[in-house]
Length: 485
Image 1: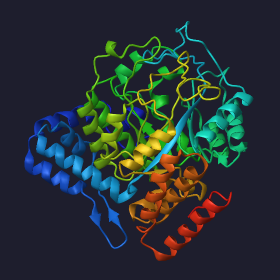
Image 2 (image 1 turned 120 degrees about the horizontal axis):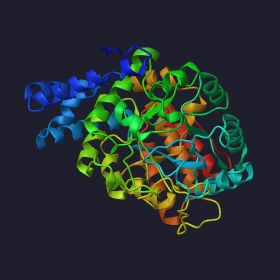
Image 3 (image 1 turned 120 degrees about the vertical axis):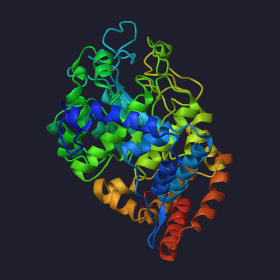
């Protein structure tokens, strides 16, 4: 019998099926145990200290009890605490990024992805370095500063050398006042040596979705190709950290397996990283299965409704309070608006999920032939920025922590003492001002300038506040950019 051990480096020991099943049984048995639930909620609530806030977080078992509870009043408390935690550690800032698809060549047989090897009618495309340059300039002209690279797994067409060359190209492009300052990478599980190369290339976060933690389902969903190896895929984050990458991003594709199982497995993975490496995931993504070429989500019987999806997100925020939560344009405006108040701290905007989907296309045009999935929120970046501000959120294009070396345990230690707020708030306002000056429509600029002036007064330290004001004045009156704390 395989024993559960969060400190183990073996996938089936730190993501242990027996432990998950015991957890789900415990959660079901205690889902109406109000004294226990109140105790768990109190543990999750942020506590004020002299330097900021601290949070205890929740174990996978405690969080599973909350997720199982279907008492409306408890759900409202979960939502309220999730918002408290989000504001305590991330304030009203929302970081914005965009995906950049390099190639849809793939040798895997994943049954939920249109890039699977047997899909012969989808056009296969791989961007040249010159095409990448055009895509990056198009993204810079929108106002983006942060990208997430996407590529299928194909050792011939998409070797690590191609990814590294692409990263170098992206960082080299300086167009008008535009720069991509952080490149996150979402590519297939690889070796420690290749992760070290990615680290040396200056990536931000390495992102890899588990898709499902249920091993039997995983093997069925990935019938062919290197991704079929459950252990190699599940243990990838340990190799990434061994290769020097200290910011990693987890995620499951909700809809493939029963959501309560996935939820417990996801939190166990976070606990494992904390136990072994001393730092949990930098981000957790919460994608849901969506329609795409050759893929009908209705053929999968584990889909979740919007309310369940919202509760999952809120419970993740209670369990891992210091971790960023990402929601993409897979979701509609209405769903994203609700989840922004339940713990989400990063969103994509103006996204295209096609290979070569940005350059040469207007805001109204959208190529579909190589899309990985349907984009639900098709608004422009300017519309997203304006929408965020109208709802009281500060759109942030900040990449300062990564570039100042505040990653991994250094980021988490600052976050856990509340000190990160002294950097993030003014940095968000300065990068928002850059966007307003260089890219915003008149309406967005007017709303944004008012927000910046109001939010500057909320910076607690007078010295920091005054420096931020001077920097913002400089941004407005010159071409100087990239101020940061």
